[in-house]
Structures are given as C-alpha cells and as structure tokens.
Length: 240
Image: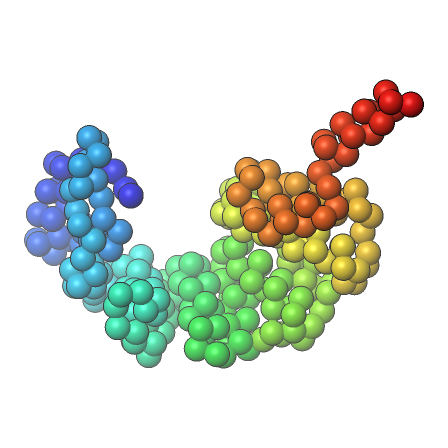
C-alpha cells in the first residue's frame, strides 16, 4: 500500500475540491488503491465509488492520466461494474493525448472482450508510442497465432526487444523476466530453432533471478540449475 503524509492528503483533497485536475487524479488514485501514513496507520480506505468520481472529474477536464485510470477502473471489473464502451471511449481520449499505457490497456480490454486482432493492433500502437511492455504481448500473440499470424521469428524478435530492457528502464522487471522465460521455452521446444540446454538454462535462470518466477523454476527443476550441476560434477570428480 502507498505511503502518504496526512498533510499531503489534505492538500490534495483541498486542491481537488477547488477544481485542480491533477489533484483530482491523485485523490482518485488514493481512493482506488488506499494509503497509509508514515506510521503504517491506514490513512485512506479504498473506495471505488469515490475513485470513480474523482477520476471522472479530472478526465472531463482532459487530464490524460485520469482518463486512462478511469477507463481501467471501468474495464477491470474488480468490485466495480464493467462498462467496456465507456472505458474504450476514455482510453481513446487518453491515447489521443499521447498516453502510451492507455493504448496498451486498450489492447488488454479488447483481449478480455474476445477480440484478439484488435488487441494485437493496440499492443502494436502502444509499442510505437514507447510502451515497451507491449512487445511481450505482441510476442505471445505471434507465438501462439492469437490475434496475429503465428510467426516464431517475430515472437522471438519481440521477446528480445523486451529482454534488452534491463536494468528495467521503460519496462517492468516482470515483463523482462517473462521475455527471458518465453525465449527459453521456445529454445527448449525447438520453436523456430532449438537452443542448447546451457543457453536455455541461462535464460530460465535470468527469468528466475529473484526466485519468484514459478514457471521458470519448474522448468529449471527439469533441466537443472547451473550451480547445482557444477557442484555435482565437482563432487563426482572427487569421488573418482
């Protein structure tokens, strides 16, 4: 949960009530996600109705981040009524102002609506606008032929573009880990071309570097981890 100073919360609310669009977005954000003070005491209890109200006020003033946030609230369907048509309208308003993450989120929305071709189109638009996380989704669409023609080479190219995101500039750590994971899966399964086990192992270990990638960890359980194999070989050499 976010940490927020009580004084700052009061400031945001006062500015929001006076019509400040940025402050309205902040108030909406904290009602959406909740917040606690420096002492760990709950300062703002999540209230999606309030979040919707303040996002909408900021969105109507043309604040792109609020338009994106409002659309996501309406499209997610988590404890709030789903309204895809309105969400799409607000996403497109945010996109028109250059909000790349709104294009990515619109792709996710079309995916959830069962429209994979439209989803892929907006992932590609998001990538063009600088949302590098979108390349992972484009790669998966190409890998499985979902919303795009199945193309292993294109999938690998997309995953490689994400993998270059280390040290996580303009791309989330999990997306980078997933890109390494899927490149490893492709190499292990011979999708496009078969990689050596050592190369695949390295990719899986990068994906599971923090020990929190369950799928990569499962497959490392099959092919073994480099350090354990190295230790086992040393032990075997000593026995001989």
